[in-house]
Length: 230
Image 1 (spheres, one colour):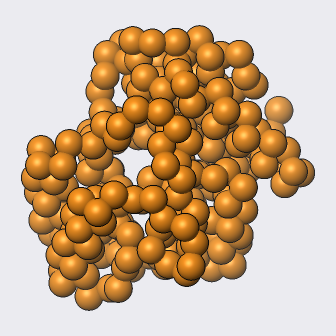
Image 2 (cartoon, rainbow, N blue to C red):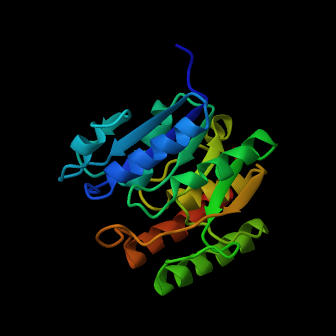
């Protein structure tokens, strides 16, 4: 069978309350595109029913024996993916799968990477004030080092050409994945485009991002990624 042109990767850790709906909505969107696709759910050592619920759908489920981190989960999904275009979105219900086509289309028109921005356009944004401040500070650091204007370096809703990801030498283990791919993408001259997205409040529970701890990891990643070139 011919490899699907599009792979959608959904990392998940203890998201039993949202993973089923996220998968279902993603399948509906991908079916509407009339193109072969695959959906890969990477269960990152969940202790709830996340993997069991995911397995009830037409998706591939990869399971980590223990919680390894979002970056590790995404990298594992990318290694397994067969598509020439790879889409990533979060499993907490904050991203709207209906916007996947908006991220994919530019890749057929000369763009290498797209990032869904929560801060472009007039779309509703439920991001917390603390996260907005942190995101702004990280954006400023990245823009200072790369001299490229960006509005949302921390978005998890993205699309990439496979050939680009293969050249970036990604090593991030946790939430610094988004930072690493942003800095390395910009630093190495790939065509990077931000696309307005709608962000909804998490369906259940609080974000697993630890502001101080993950913030330090993100800052270190920026400095490391800046000096690395493909």
